[in-house]
Length: 149
Image (tube, rainbow, N blue to C red):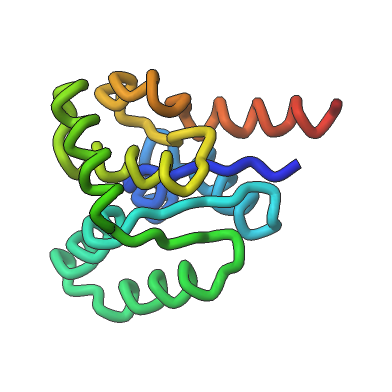
């Protein structure tokens, strides 16, 4: 059974910054994407946020490697922004009070059939009526339980 989830930007950042609190579980989620167990949707908003981080550190090579990896790995789906997603994001932002970039990520997940929003941002719990909001550790635990069935 393949789980479909939209990954918040912090999952990718935690995996990159191995000293972060959630880095081990974030890395394990990305490993599960690479082995085909999880289908990971990545919003273009997350791509922009990640690239900003690389540019801020002057790491053009790291940025290129990341983008190349995300584009070439079958388990990652990079999803663009269109009018229906934009409209849904506006509704979600107005309804929850979330920042528009976060609402765009959630709307993208909804549009692309995600079951989960994987994040470590407690503020995004406000989106739980739209997608099940779950940490990387909790997603891995659910995946392991589902695999045993």
